[in-house]
Structure formats: C-alpha cells, structure tokens
Length: 396
Ligand code: PLP
Image (tube, rainbow, N blue to C red; front, side):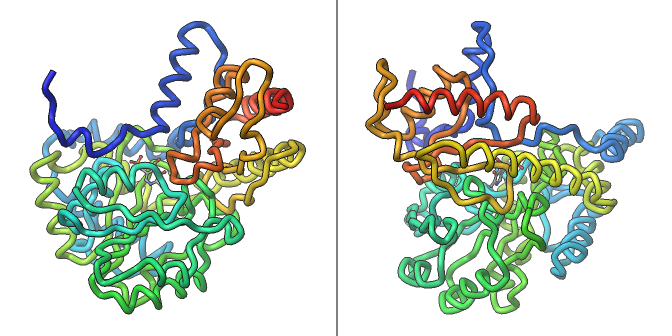
C-alpha cells in the first residue's frame, strides 16, 4: 500500500516495541515481568480522581480554549512559582495532550527544515524522532558515564554553533536518572548565553522523582528566560499517564506558535483532564512525594541486587525510576545456545530466557547499556532481578 514518505523519516518508540513483545509472550501464557515501560505503577491520588469525577458531573464536556482553560494556565503559573520560583503569566503557558504532544509542538514551533538540534546522549527516545519528523537535523552529543551522563559546559561549547536552533535535555534524565545541580546548569547557561539563536527545551517531567534534593530548572537564569522552553506534565509525578496532560512554559511568541499548531491538530486537550490537572497542580504534593519515597526504597534495593552481579557497571540514579547499567562485559558471551553481540541481543535474551522485558540502550543513543525500570512492585522487582541474575550468570 502506498503510504506517506514522511513515515520513513522516523522510527517507532523502542520502549513500546518491547512492551508489545512482552504482551505477546504473556498472551502465550508466559509470566513476563515488565521492566520496560516508563510509567508509575501507582494509582492516581484520590483527591485528583474526585476532581475528575466532579468535572464530569458539572458537565465540563465542551471544547475548551485551544491552550487550555484560563484557570489551568493560571494553575501552572502557581505551580511554577511555588515549586521553582519561576514567574510566568498565563500567556506563557499552553496545555497539551501529554508532554509528548507538548514536545512535538515545541519542536515544530521552533525548528525549520535543516535546522540543527543538539541532543546529549543518552536521551529519551522521542526527542530525536520528533526532530526528524520536523525535518530538523539531529546532532547527538555523547556524554561521559564518569559525569553521570551529564553534558559539561566544555562538551556543549565544542558542539554548539550559530547554526544550532534547539538543545533538548531532561533533568531528572530518562534513561540515566541523572539530575543536574544548579551549578551545573549555570555552567551550561553561560555557554547558551553566547548563542542567542538557540532555544533550550528543558524536559522536567520527572521533577518530583528526585532522590538528591531540590529540583533546579535552567529557566531560573534570567539571561536565558526568553529562550528556555520548560516542558512538564502530570504523567510521572502524579501517576496520571492515561489522563494525557503536558504543558509548556515559554515566551508568548512560542506559545502562540504552539497554539496555532494545536488548533489544527487536536484543539484543547481533554476537558476532564484539565479540571483534574488544576487540582493536581495546586493542592498538597504529599501523595507525589510518598510515591517518590517508595521509588527510592526500590532504587536502593535494585542497586544492592545489581552490585552483586559481576560485569554490571552503572551510575546510581539520582532521579526518575530507571537504572541504566553498562552491559558490555556480556558482549561476545553465550549461554551455549545464543551469543550476545550487543545490547539489543541482551534485551532479547532477558526477555526470552528470563522473561523480563527491558529496553536496549541503543534506543536512547547509548548502545553500551540497557534500561531497566523499577516502576513495579517490590515483589515483582525481587522476582525479576532473581531471574536476571540467573540468566546473566549463564553467559560464559
Ligand atoms: N519526557 C520524558 C523524559 C519521558 O520519559 C516521557 C514519558 O515517558 C515524556 C516526556 C512524555 O510523557 P507524557 O506524554 O506521558 O506526558
């Protein structure tokens, strides 16, 4: 069948591919433990669910303004002031159908055909693919595991030029779990200050899942304020992946451009979700921090289990809910049936022999590693790591 040539520009997300393979095995009756997907295993907090139910009863069932209800845009400003000490007005905010949609809007609003976009590796799979779909040119810049996969000002300086239109990164980072400190962001900000044509897309969706303290945003540096596009959403911190609510905070021109795009693609996001989001963003964050406490407890246990496996090296994650170990020690080894050539093979080996789904680091631009989530119950995590340990021990 003849389909659009645009489809050749980008790939399907590897994370979803692994989850699909896991589901297929499960359909055959095999007990697969899913450590591939990036979503909290918790339920949405009660008071947010109540707000959604109330919205239905109060008939919030009509189209909303494209950029979101005024009260929601106001609520995002309240949140950004409360949590990040950032001052924005509603005209700086647009709500969309998940942070993935917000990302697409931001990229399509700022990147023209042939524009260069710098993405430090490892990075979240969707960044590069959305840029390619927008006909931008992806420039991947490797970072060092010695610096917990965080780009340094020197590395940024060596990569950036007047041709660079956009820089995309996340802190806390998916997949590495690294978290940038204020001093580290300040170092990067000094470099960006010299390149006035470059926007900085700061993905802060794992903001609340931070094990080292206060979240810092690169938007706090006044000299960059007009060029930083803050990306955030409710999926991770409030366990609301299915609600689909992401938002951007940026210069009003960027927001208006996103509104124009969104006006044709989707219109305003779901009305019920928006009402629930107002409650989520402006009420007590206790349930979110309780989830983070549990993620931290699991992280500690996973680190303990990983330390006992010869051949795994890894930076300890400071945020998000993934470990991202280097697995090159297993390349070239075999269990007598299969030889592991690379990280893709190792993920398939763990899926087929240990019945645990993980994601190859190649999908995140780091082919020496694999990503293993701890967004699953402690019981499942214990069982999964027992199986992983046994399967890796068979590789000689
Ligand atoms: N940014 C990062 C770094 C992510 O890991 C994800 C989800 O996996 C998203 C953005 C998108 O989140 P959503 O579209 O569910 O809001």
